Structures are given as C-alpha cells and as structure tokens.
Length: 375
Image (cartoon, rainbow, N blue to C red; front, side, top):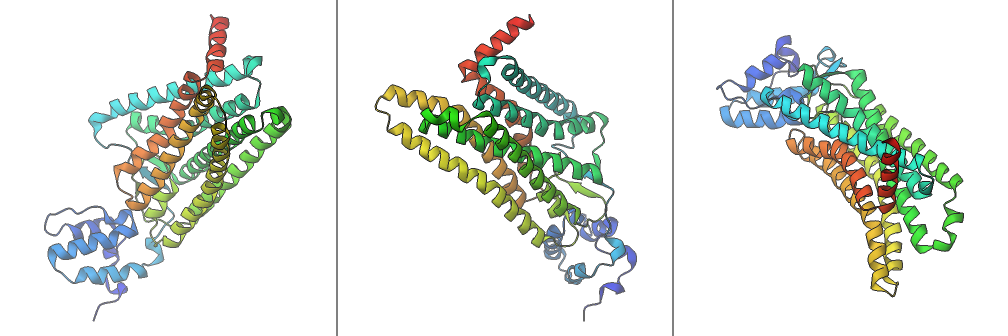
C-alpha cells in the first residue's frame, strides 16, 4: 500500500529543492532540475525510476497532487537564465545586445524624424511607418535594458511585479506591431486596388482612428495576458529559461499543473494573432490579383517591388512570433526558444528601418535632406 503524502517529513516534499536534488542524484547522475516545472517532474521521475528501479518514485509522483499550501508560494522574484550562464561569454553578449539596441534606436528614430521633418512624407503610409518604428523602439526597450543590467552586474533576478510589468509592455508593443502591419497592408490594398479613391478613403481622420483602435486593442491584449499570469502560483526559486518574462515560459513553470491555462493562453494568442493575419492575407490576395491584371511586365515588377519591403517585415515578424510559441510548447528548456525570442524582440526591430529605407527612395532622400540640415 502506498503511503499518503503526509507520511513524508516536511523536508521531503516535492517542492523542496535539496530533497528533490538528492532524490534524483542517488547514483551521482544529475538528471536535471525537476522543481523548475511540474510538467518536467514526471519525466525526471520516470527517468530516475528507470535508472534505479525503485518504486518509491511512483509514490512521490502520486503525491505531487497533494502538496500542502505552505509549500506553494507567490514568489517575490524570478531568475532569468538568459542566453548563456558561462561568465566568459558575458562581455560578448553585453557588447552584442548593446550594439543591436543602439542600432535599433538610431534607425527607428531616424525614420520618425524623417517623417516628422519632411512634408513630402506626410502621407498615410509614412504616418503608419513612423508609428511602427515607435512600437519597435518600445518593444526593444522593454527587454534589452534589463538584459544589459543583468549581464553587467552578473545578477539575473527580476521581481514578480517587474516581471508582470515587463510582459505587459512586451505584449502591448508586440501586438501593436502586429496590428500596425495589418493597417499598413490595408493601406497598400487601397493604394493599389482603389488608387482613385485612395485620398478619400485613407484620410487623416481614418488613419488616426485606426492607430488609436490598434493601441486600445493592444492594451486589452497585454492586460489579458498579465491577468492570466497573475493568477498562477509558483514554487520557490523559479528559473525562467529565457532573458525576459514570457507567459508561455511562466505557464510551464507554474507549480500546480497549468495545462488548462496554457491551452487558454494559446487559444487567446491564436485568436488575437489570427485576426491580423487574416486581414493581411485578404489584403495581399486582392493586391496580387490586381497586379496580375496589369498588362505591362514593368508595371507588375514595380508593384511587387514596392510591396516587397512590407512583405519581408511581415514574414520576419510572424515567422519568429510563431517560432517563440512553438518552441515554448515543444520544450520549455531548449535554447531554441531563447534564440527565437531574441529574434522577435531585438533583431526584427533592428532590421525594420533598414528594410524600409534601403528599398524606399523617398525615405533615403528625406534622410539625406535631414543629414544635410544637421551638418
């Protein structure tokens, strides 16, 4: 007959790190940190059972459902493991993140200043582009400064409140990026499919309204994710295998099994992500069908070239965004998830100004005029 959970001494409860560590390392074979995530406990216990052949692992596994409340606590801080824990790599990582952050800030600020200072760029397309650059700056500034501080001070902790604030701003700016890309796709659709009605349809009032609605929906989405995370309960000493607080990682680390909440957050993300993607697909299906009806090959090439920069940004943004969620769902400890997060929050905001400016003669001319005025 298997003993009940209360027959184990207080020190021998599954959320106690030292007990779990000694439990898994009876033969000197360190099999991992099973207290990091409840979903991983079963895997480690089964692996340890195969290694030792001792039945009490099954007893412990059955007791995970009957933990006393004092062993589950609302943690005061998390530990961000970052990209690498090797001290020799920290100066390289610090220099890499600092360089990408400065390039991102400079590139996006130049686009914003270009649009503001040049009257030729006071059009709906460039108004939306400047807002996209502002969202990129916010998305990067939410994560990179904390990474730089942690790397420089060799401290990886982040408070519980700081984690919630970070994920709230991260999701706000990330979803604002998504909605602005959708509005820009609609702008291209009107410009190519209804060129004669473009000034009437894409008037300044509609552009401002679309941006305000995007901001409101992004705020609602970020607060929804923040509220779902705030309902979770964690074991002590929670380690996040990433450089920022991300809800999929936090759901994997929840001490009671958060499978229902995990399914909920993926469903919410699918809904909030599916609507913009549907709008983009609809716009570009209509755009491609209109371009194919152009008789001259030169006109077709020019139209596809004009839309190429926006399509490149869309593919990068949604490709890495899906990669972040899929890598978190497959295995919360894989470095692939961290790399995808770096691409999504750091690399793409850095590349956006180059993608739009290098393929856009108006931006390059405005930038040249701005630099001439400054010099």
